[in-house]
Length: 157
Image (spheres, rainbow, N blue to C red):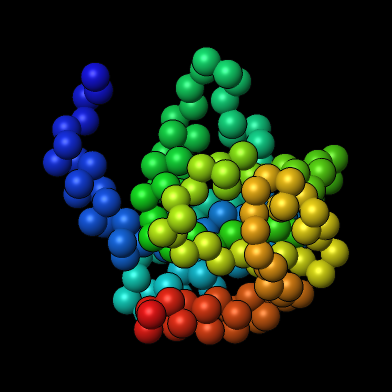
């Protein structure tokens, strides 16, 4: 039993159909959110993004974290999910991304768009259940071009 009604969840699902979720955790992509925001808005969709979200936002078993709860709600409600995996922050590793443990729980009807840096070990993604080949982007301009192209395909579909 919770405090949210069925109507809340129905409304959230309707909103999610137009939402595009973006998460990244790499120094090379720290300023890409503005490009993401602009391109998503160009397509008449609703942008939601989280930057610099490492595993420290995942609460310990049995504990809760408000930001983690918010990210989970946005992640699982969004129809389209855009992720970037790149070179890690200092003293972190390639697995330091909030979203990794959540990939295996993603519904199959979601549009998942994954970008990686040219040096990201994609084996990490497959270990967390990501099937498919991510798109390699080297710079912010490459990300913007790829995102614009990929969203256009999804909007048309």
